[in-house]
Amino acid sequence: MTESQAGSIFPPGYPLNTIIKPRLEHLAEAPIPTRNGTFRLLVFRYDDPSAHPTLSDEHVALVMGDVSGQSHVPVRVHSECLTSEVFGSLKCDCKEQLDAAQSLIGQRGLGVLLYLRQEGRGIGLANKIKAYALQADGVDTVEANERLHLPVDARQYDVAADILRQLSVRSVELMTNNPEKQESLDRLGIPVVGRIPLHTGANPHSEGYLTVKRDRLRHLLPGDLGRTKH
Ligand SMILES: [Zn+2]
Image (cartoon, rainbow, N blue to C red):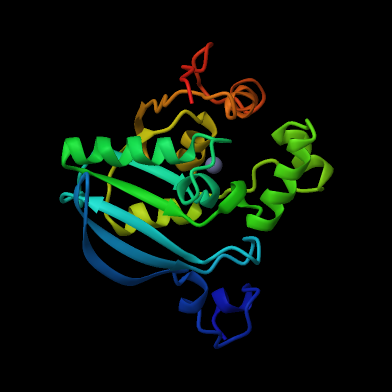
């Protein structure tokens, strides 16, 4: 036994490369034409034992242009929101932010949109709908999660940082209103050199939610929330 092994918490002969092996796996890739231009869609699997068990472990990077080795790459780190993105729910601004980010990347011809499968800020679809049921009785989004004994925001960005490293992105301009997301990526070793605000406006159904985001969750949104008519 060598001296370094003697001090190790692992038994002698333990294959150490399995410990440091990245949990990120690149599964598939193909070009995808969209109304914002043609992107490369890459699918990654991320084995995160701390994620909610109902969440998918397959995440997407939608990439435009050659981002490898580039600095100041426009990046959106977006978490799945089935209700708005598929069914057009007006309770939140997720779909609008997704569309705005994809459109901006299309205009610049360069960027990365990471689509993370963290439905309901990481608590999963069923829990999110349970929270919506409480919200229908007048409870706000933070209190609803608290009543269900769920975290207000369980999202994690390790997978985002690992994918950006895999894509060899050197620094990012983050498309977000959420300083917490910016700080998280910085902590995870991804230099955030700029922020691109995504102010997509509020409607009567999303106004309460966006107000909570601004006043209780520190999101950088305008005083009038950029109200629109729906
Ligand atoms: Zn949403």
